[in-house]
Image 1 (tube, rainbow, N blue to C red):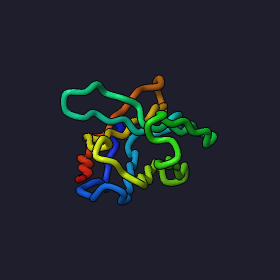
Image 2 (cartoon, one colour):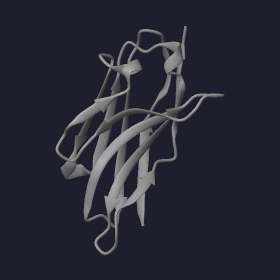
Image 3 (cartoon, rainbow, N blue to C red):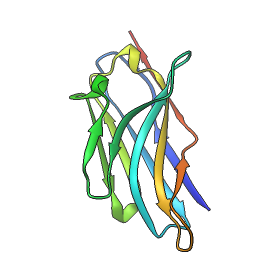
Length: 120
């Protein structure tokens, strides 16, 4: 079994900053791409940012220049630094990781979600 546990999030005023982190634990041989997704009420699930195992990053256009994703492979952790937050960034943020267990095949794993609320 693999678990992803997120931390961070909360309430912040527009223009402020928040940081999220997500630690993967359990039966892990290797971790591929890690990322953050979000879902706002009444809206579709969307990718926010991705980082590969070789640290290549990709961002949604809506967060480019404001958010930064990073990872620590030694700690199986992915981070999301969110700056210049806007009310439209309010959503539940989910961590994702592609994980290869010691015996088995690659699988997709998700965190439980953490609420980010940006007040205007």
